[in-house]
Length: 284
View 1 (cartoon, helix red, strand yellow):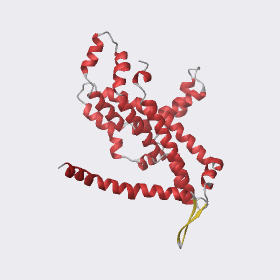
View 2 (cartoon, rainbow, N blue to C red):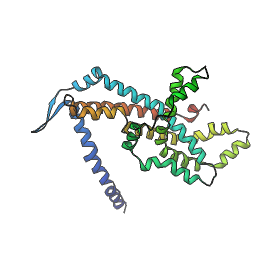
View 3 (spheres, rainbow, N blue to C red):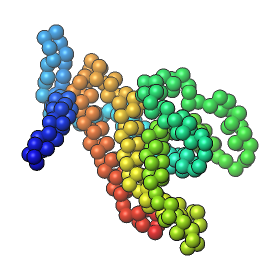
View 4 (cartoon, rainbow, N blue to C red):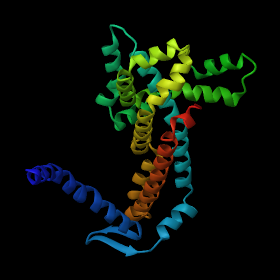
């Protein structure tokens, strides 16, 4: 019976393993080999000329556009990941409060995950969906305070215009935080309040500590989502170089593998930071 159960489990897992080998592992190997070659598509088929690490050296040393795209990508991660996590946690805590319209608001915040995709957002961005009407009026109003320099005003405008991006990527994170909040034991909060803990202390020392596993999951999910989103500047460059006559598939494959290594390092750093002991994270 034990062997039968094991074979049944292997049978259920087999389609995934087969699909991973055919559609993921083999393309990864083929792309790696292609990154060390100069690939040309001719009437006689695909021709590969081995060039060693020339593609990687050209990317790192000579390709200014790749460095610029990588810088923009890292800046997006540094800016959007914390904002998305904080916004998702705040909305989840609000939706966890008692109320008659909680189900409707949960649906509203999750709708972008269901009905839209990267190309849809790209079309919205191209139509100026992120730009606020009357930016000049807003800048003049903020400058009227007299103590805000122009660079601070421009950053404020950028954060306001980035709200659409933050809202678009927060649906699933909100649900994960909300599920974790609903599973928290109310008796722990009541006991802390009886002992004299304020709401801030309860949130900082109790709620965040119990949400730490969900913070790790949401951080990982947010980094991966932003990294594979269609508006990512590196993905745009890979697509452009792939069909460039002078560069081609070999050069684009080398960029892909450099990006893959960078992404693995970023994910490792993010998980290492968020999986530290709760008392080290929140000052307990």
